[in-house]
Image 1: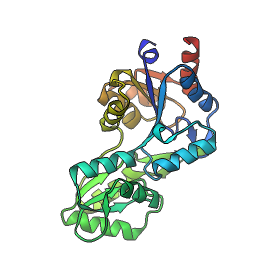
Image 2: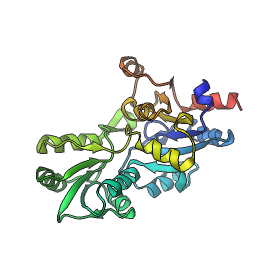
Image 3: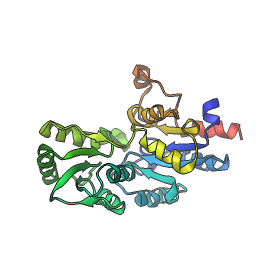
Image 4: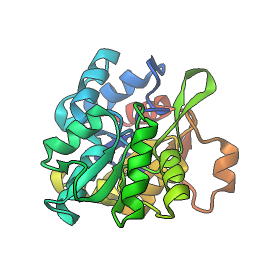
Length: 264
């Protein structure tokens, strides 16, 4: 457990890791408090681009988790930063929630439908056929295709799921022939940005999540420590089939809390 104990900063997935829907997992809040008590830092790192960063602060506090704005980093925030770097001043057509559009605008991204240079897709729980129609039009006429996250589904209680950003993008690709560039996990960019902001080197950052192709892959791509919990999407069978294995596989974040407590 040396890698885990040497961790100074935990990057925590939320959906499927700390809660499902509005159901907080047993011991999840205690886990956050244990991180704090051990002198370590934590950031809630999510690919869910349907909400803005400030919305997560409100939501997490309502669920009982300690959270300040500095404790949240979303794929929407990372996408806005990427758009400003790669497409400064360009008009972007968004396919996303009002919160996602507000997040982009808060970073100065220009949204519109005239002279569109980029189609930017998030996890759109307010999706309409009109949005899809316009996005396909812009993509077929040369617009770049940027997407916040590659997740196919968002896990929900009672073993249900919602179609996520990756599924929406698959539809757009089928209709336009254009493939997206994904910004969120597993792109290492999110970890690198946080490392630069906090001063914690990647090898002392631990990514905790339930998805091999995002939460675990981002850690592997960034040279960070990875913990896959079995409380969400991934199963032991999935992990056995995976070419690249997580550093640790645990039942839930409660197990991480127990390890930290035993070494405090």
